[in-house]
Amino acid sequence: MKRRVFSNVPQFFAAIAAVFLLVVLSGCSKDDGKTLYLFNWTYYTPDSVIKQFEKEFGVKVKVDSYASNEEMYAKLKAGASGYDIVIPSQDYVSIMIKEGMLREIDHSKLTNKGNISDLVLSKATYDPTMKYSVPYFMGAAGIAVNKEKVSDYNRNWSIFADKKLDQRMSMLDDMREVIGDALISLGYSVNTTDDAQLEEAVELINKSWKPNLVTFDAEGFGKSFAAGNFWVVQGYAEAVFGEVPESDWSKIDFFIPEEGGPMYIDSMCILKNSKHPDLAMEFINFIHRPEVYAQFLDQFGFPAGVNPAAAQYMKKEAHYTVEELANCEIKEDLAEDLAKYSALWEKIRFGD
Image 1 (spheres, rainbow, N blue to C red):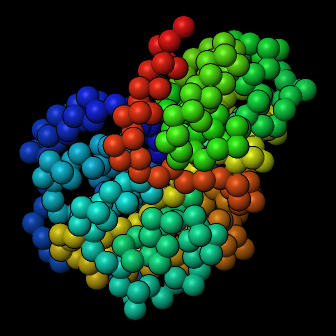
Image 2: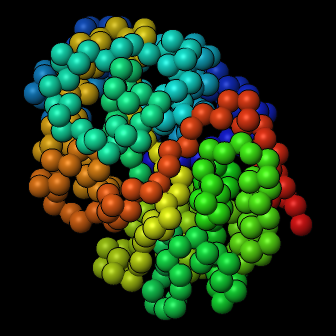
């Protein structure tokens, strides 16, 4: 699973152009009423879960994947049809609700909704009653430290200001993440649109953090960390641990700073034009069986924050804890103020 975002409008329209041909060439096969069409993040649904659902319900599941919310959204807006379930992040759930792209969740068929935690619903301010979306996973980027190379460090975002680690660190090439980290460090919301607060965040990044970084990297930071080129990286746990041999995991300190940071909630949604809404509800309900959801958590080393009952079925230890998410804040849809963030990100990425 990749989590990359486009930082400006031209990139968004580039995404539309890039997927247009896919829309023309792709499409679901002739409908037999027994096939569920899932549009999901790359590698985000374990094969074991898909096969178990297919066997139990006597159906087939066809999966198409995307690498970003923008790619998913652009493909749907360009005319892709036939999908039943899509799994956008919180800001795009909000957008898709406003644009009437989603079908309401049938709670009479969501018999496993009692397994969904109050914590995730309290964070899901865009749809707290699950009217249009059912949480799939909530998580956050954190900091990975190579303990063999670094022994004395702050376990918070100020680590990126540490001159001892000059040119041994990277942060994500993601404006909402990096600016959000700075805002949290300063005691502000990750969703603020206050000009003075944003300028203060940019100053912190440009003067204290950026001089010590090798690069902003949202794609290869896991590989660079595993190779020993970077000793400290901001990123997603699954990308780091996925590149490091399991025998060396004890050498990694991965944590989400106590002050929190930006977080995401990916949710299962049924598209308005779904041809198989009942089957889609069966799948969503199936995912939240604790023993099934545990397979998903084990696949990525995720904690059971969305479905706490799954913890008892997990066979692997999570890379971070649910408690570390307590002070994190979801990234909301900024609407027209996204352009403000994009302009500030240009100052950070390409300024002196």
